[in-house]
Each structure stands twice: as structure tokens, then as C-alpha cells.
Amino acid sequence: MSDSRHLVVVGASLAGLRAIEAARADGFDGRITLIGAEPHLPYDRPPLSKAYLDELPVGQEPESTVFRSEQMLTDDLNVEVLLGVPASGLDTAARVVSLSDGRVVDYDLLVIATGADARRLPGTDNLAGVHTLRTLDDAVAVRAALDAGARTVIIGAGFIGSEIASGAHKRGLSPVLIEALPTPLVRAVGEEMGAELAALHTRNGIDLRCGVPVASIEGNGHVERVVLADGSEIPADLVVVGAGAIPGTAWLEGSGLTVDNGVVCDENMWTGIDGIYAAGDVARWHNATFDRPMRLEHWTSAAEQGAIAARNALNPSTPKPYATVPYFWSDWYDVRIQFVGSTNADEIVVVEDLDTDGRLVALYREGDRLGGVLTVNGQTEIMKYRGQILKRASFVDAVEFAEKRKAARANASRETVPTPS
Ligand code: FAD
Image (tube, rainbow, N blue to C red; front, top):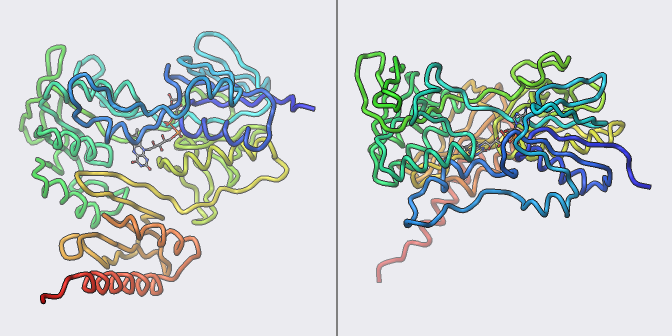
């Protein structure tokens, strides 16, 4: 007999898609409805600030980042897809989601996967040429401006701002990258390593200005200049604001769900209200691996949480917790930056550094444990440290492990150096 429950997923992106796929993989054959605010099929965001911005021969379009065709969604996964229509409200007593066009959708089980929206700078909404980079439409607009050789100013030297600076630089443009704080990325990797990563920009000849807030963005209909608090003026045709993201919870106001920097969930991604789970960038859940609440804006956790939220919604009496060691990556210039764990560091030990070793491996100590690891060009290393954090390795053991790997690598490269005959 088929399952008569109706699973509704709000948010048609990574976490929402993974929720649907997991529900079907789990054998759920009931009705599924996917509601998305954007008119697009679910698509992948990381490429939007990377390969999507690359310069291409005239007439060539960047590769689509859509995850699944419409046919796969509707026929293979048997999902009713409602796109271009944001959810505007939730009534948990009546078990209905209201849509902005006046329709209502009833549900038995609900997965909230509404992600996050880019933070905008006040007063810039009517100034053409000022963008954020969160959606495909944003990326299309930024790409077009770069194609036109725009004088580019990027506000915010976080990961996305840095990737855009790198993309503009690859095209031969000379972007100006502005950061209000004295050091970029302090929240993401700590002060010391934020400075280390910022050096990648200066090494590539980028005009990086730190510790100077923006005073105003000016222009007559279209942006013309960015004025900084120190009075300097930077001419601009394109301004991209990379000032972080805000969880997409506005539509949940008055619903009774607990919202506090995201939808608050327990370790099973459950909101505490019957049948309602959350996943991805919008969810703030209890991560048992670190025994604290976290809200991540990382691809890997969004995908994994989507699957767990759906499975737990379908099987509430046997829930599985989502406990993880957070992981993200970012690509700038010709390097890959990766981070695992938490940046709550009491001390950071740099075992390998870019200048002398060609890669960076930095270990973060939290108490007497390994809490996090940052690598640059450490693709062969990073997951080993994720395993170490998961098994709660002591910091002393982790440093020893890292030193051994460094020595082994040095030996291997000595052996491959040809001896003169
Ligand atoms: P989102 O992808 O934000 O999707 C949420 C969806 O819900 C959106 O389509 C939104 O329109 C929709 N929505 C919002 N409100 C409503 C509503 N009321 N009703 C219906 N639908 C709604 N992570 C990494 O680890 N590495 C990277 O290199 C990396 N690069 C990135 C580059 C860019 C440009 C961006 C934007 C993100 C990047 N990320 C990266 C982060 C990663 O893409 C996100 O963590 C991931 O997309 C989160 O997925 P999500 O489904 O939770 O939310």
C-alpha cells in the first residue's frame, strides 16, 4: 500500500533536492511537492563565483550548473515542482504553507530548506551596477559586467568576494578589493590565518584595502564610484557586495518555530514541531561532534542535512542525528583553500607554509584537542585531518601526525629528484 503522507520541501536548491532524493531512495512513494522562490530548477552555487565567471570565446555560454533536468524531477523522482513562487507563511496548526500568489499547500511532513540571502548595502537598491552574488541571476549580471571590462570594486574580502576578485584578475581586469576590518576572514579562519590568506591577493597584485569602511556608493542611476571613509574615491562600473548572508527565515514569522540566527533544530534537524525539519544554510542545529549549536553555510553540510532531515521526517521514531566535522573549500587564483572543523582556537600551529613547502597546513588547538585544520594546496591531506577531529585526536598526536606526513613528503620528493650522472 502506498504511503499517503504528503512531504513538502520549501527551498528548491541543494538541501531541498537532497531531501527529495533521500526520501525516494528511502522507499517513500507518497506525494512530494517542491516549492522554490527562484524561477530556476535547483542549481549548484559554488561554480557561480568560480568557473561561471571565466572568460569564454564570444558566443559560448558558461556550463549550466543545474543539478537535475525537469524531467528527472517530475518523472523519475515524481515531484510536483512549484517554481518562482516563494512561500510566504506557515500555519503549523492547520499544517499549511501559504504561497505569495495566494495558493496554499497542505503538508503532513515539511522540510524547510530556504537557505540564506545575500546581505545588501542599504541605499543601493536603485543603483544599477551594484550586485550581490548569491543566485544564478546575480552571476549572469556580474559575468556580463566583467565581459564588458567593468572597473570592478568588490566590497568584502570574504570567500565569495575573494573568488570574484580572483575571477576578475584572471580576465586581466584590475579589481579593487575592500575590507572594512583590518584583516579579512577572521570569523572564518581566525586572525592569523586570515592575514595569511589575504597575502594571496597581494601576491597576485590585487589592490586590497583593509580597515577602511565604505562611506558611500555613488552614481547617477548607474554606479560611478565608491567612496571610502578615509575620503578616497574608487571609480567603478561594477560593485559586488560580498557582505555575508542572512538565513531565509522571514516567511516563518509568526509560525511559532524558534528562529534565532536560523531555524533552531535539535541534533536530528527537528524543529520541535511535529513533522517539521530544517536543513542547509537556514538551519541552526545541535552538532553533537562539537556539542554546540552551529549554522553552516557550506555545500557539504547542506547536502547531508537535506538527506537526514527528510529521512528523519519520514521515520520520526528512529531518528538519526546529524553530527559532523564541518568542511568547506574555496578556490582563488591557482590554489585550493580547505578547512575542516571549528575555528574556536586557543592556538594555531603552522606545520607547513606556502613559501617554504608550497602548501599550508595549519592545525587549530581547542583545549587539548585538534579542533580544526586549514590547508592551502592540501587536497591530499585535508580529509585525513577531518578523520582525526572526528575521532577526537589529541593536539599533540595531531601535530606529530602532521610532522610525520611533512617528513614523508620531503623524503618522497628527495627520492624523485634525479641524481646527476
Ligand atoms: P540555498 O542554496 O541558499 O538555497 C535556498 C533556496 O531556497 C534558494 O533557491 C532560495 O531562492 C529558496 N528560498 C528562499 N526563501 C524561500 C521561500 N520563502 N520560499 C521558497 N523558496 C525559498 N560552499 C562551499 O562549501 N564551498 C564553496 O566553494 C562555496 N562556494 C559558494 C559560492 C557562491 C557564489 C555561493 C552563493 C555559495 C557558495 N557555497 C560554497 C555555499 C553553498 O553553495 C551553500 O552552502 C548551499 O548552496 C546551501 O544550500 P541550501 O539548499 O541550504 O540553500
